[in-house]
Length: 371
Image 1 (tube, helix red, strand yellow):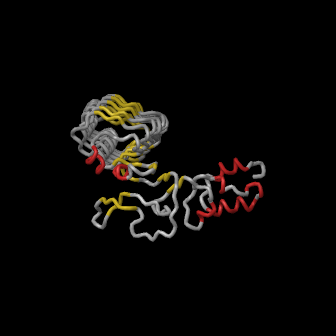
Image 2 (tube, helix red, strand yellow):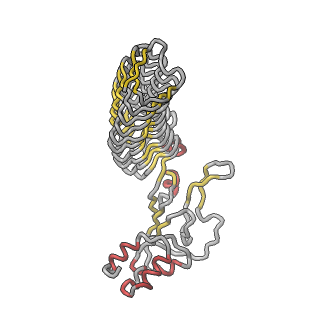
Image 3 (cartoon, helix red, strand yellow):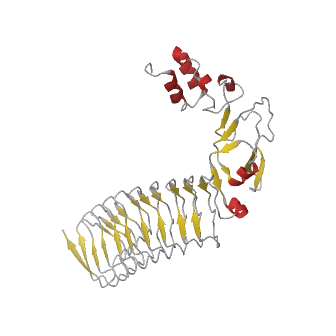
């Protein structure tokens, strides 16, 4: 601590969380005295009492909706007892005991885009802005550059949305955001780090999508039913693919799953009628239930030596599947795993497999046991 100068301590103290931390630093070392006076903004939430420690504040930062704003009220979104969205002064019902003026107010808690428009003439900067379904109904399909997230069901069943450019500040796309849209093209910025469940589900006109490098998880049913999605590049940043993620993508032909993926959900590629080739990495230990169900064009699959279990109905009704190699790492094959795979005449099963579910193979398939 003694090697830190007073300026460096100010930088470090920006990450303190309580007023006690700031007080203790000044008491601990004489050269850090007056540290709080150096700040022209508040790095933590303040009360009328603790405000007196920061004598030179010009910009007030509001980190939480409950923070003291010293009489600087503004309109925020809220919900009433009927769960309807309402807009009212943040200080409604509060007793204002201390009023102070500031050069600017910076709001960090999340607000919707309508809140921005209702405070457009105030010197307030909103850092976390969600474009909600309610906003889209009011303001249309063009997303403002100040928006940082797209809310759940924002463009739900939007029939007049064909092409969309998502602004560069957006970091997250909510669950069901584009469900059953007529979206054919979407540009997603590199700033996006999360997709919600059902994000692009049922976007039957979507032909191609580039997944940003910040995405680590493709959540449940994210692209389910994207009938015209022909190719998709899954970047190495992705480590998990959720249930039904690409199910019903009837035009999808080839998929390479990155080597970093450790989790694949159930019915991940079910009903992908055009799928001919999937490369499963050695990082995967479990192939889930109904994983390739009714992938009628799938003729061959190589299961990596890392896999220990193949889920129930995994290859059910893969009518074109004629060859599959099951590694000696597999110990369990679930119910109906290869049922109705009528092109599968012979399967070599290693002795490592100790559990067979009911109706694992078609009646005509010849089973061979191998070391």
